[in-house]
Length: 138
Ligand code: ATP
Image (tube, rainbow, N blue to C red):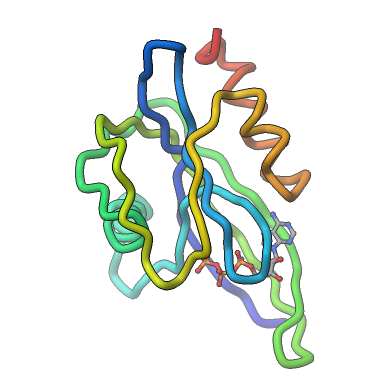
C-alpha cells in the first residue's frame, strides 16, 4: 500500500464575536483545514508554514503549544489504495485576507460550531472537537 504524509493546521483568527476558523474547499469537493504534503527534509511545522503561505498567502502564524494530533484515512488514486496520515497543529493568525492558490476552489472563516458542520469528514470533525475538549474554545 502506498503511504502519504501531510501536515496541516487548524488556523483561527480572533474576531469581535470570537474565534473564526479557516476551511478550504478542495478540488475533489470536500472542506477541510489547510494542509499539504511534507517535502523531504521538512519538519511538520515547516510544512505547515509553507503550505499556509502557498495556499492562503498568510505569513503570520503562531503555533499554540500543546496541540498536535493526527488524522488517518485511506483513499484510491489510479486504482491504488493510499494510506494517508496528516499531522495537525493549532495556530492563530492576525490576517483576515486570504489569497487562494489555484489548488483550491474556495475558503471560508467560520465560528467553531459552523466550522464543525462544514467539515466534510468525520475524522476531521473528531480532530476539531479536541480543540473544544482542551477548553480552548469557550
Ligand atoms: P494535500 O492537501 O495533503 O496535498 P490532497 O488535496 O492531495 O491533499 P486530500 O485532501 O488528502 O488530497 O484528498 C485525497 C482524497 O482523500 C480525496 O478523495 C478526498 O475526498 C479524500 N479525503 C480527504 N480527507 C479525508 C478524510 N479526512 N477522510 C477520508 N477521506 C478523505
